[in-house]
Image (cartoon, rainbow, N blue to C red):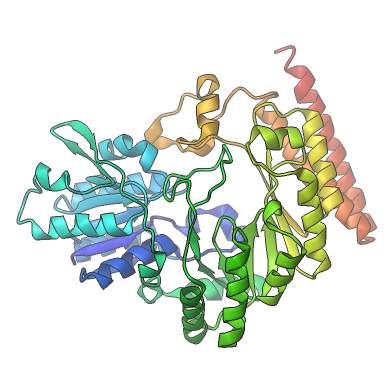
Length: 468
């Protein structure tokens, strides 16, 4: 085997995802697979999601790929390192190439842990050039050959070498559709169907994000906005419908409604092709209005996630979100008025956040009343502005090879335990409000008790910090 692509995510090891059960196919490596295939490089994809580490290792030993490309993010980092150790110990002739959002700002560390090459930024063109160079070489890959490949990092005579960044792809229509036939997509569809009654397939229509939220990583696509034509997107949807006939789609774009002109053309093309597949997407309140919401409805949107991160305008401004919290509330309510479900994202523990800000977030969630909300405690990802801001006040001293960015903590307004209680407080109090609104009185009482206990825990942690 010449080239193998994989991603080292194992659903069986992820207890939280087993409860949520919303797995999506690895679009990134499927795009790379299609691009390599388009340019004459035969490749296979080993989809680890529904597999096990033992089966994966056996596959490697049986097929002995000349090159293995592994997608790495902060969720899979430790599995990637473990996989590299196994490959280096058992398949010393295999070249290991890493890409994905976690590698750009940790390139030297990954190389020291056993990677041969790091792909920084978009992977299609760079991966093709690396594969072509390796497969064309009879033995050792000369340094002067590597220096012609932009967007890579590697070690040369013990020294860390990075090449200049590759220009971002301007014409995304030149990309082939993701190579979905390389994996068993029905495993995903069946898992969704079993747990939710309906299934979904993920689709990308754009790359990059022009906004500057301080906590968000832009390691792969950068601060940009590039979009595929509506004709290409709808053509892909036609193929998906014919091959898989999914119940819904998940558009993975950071801001689906960023271009109102594109959305209008998308609506017109769907009508022209007589195709309509229900979908959900993510956007921002400042890229919504009544006309846009109406177009979302017309194009099949059944759920839209509207980012806020906090109910406190002060915290939103500290995040450089550049959105008005009242506008977020208004757009959530207006979207629901049009019969589209709403969701929003909440982050607690951002630097400078006080208890008053957390109460503002609870108020925000009650007033806007989204159908769904997800909530997490803020953590700094290397390469982001948030990481730079808190680097000097980090309170954890972690071994890079055995930890992830999610474990990094820093000096916050209150103790880390305080935010565990705050998390419970927000969830319980907002769900109490929803239960009371639905006349679920017994559930409402239980949730109110949980909220009160969590609030007491917050107060205890806040005051006890003065004495310890």
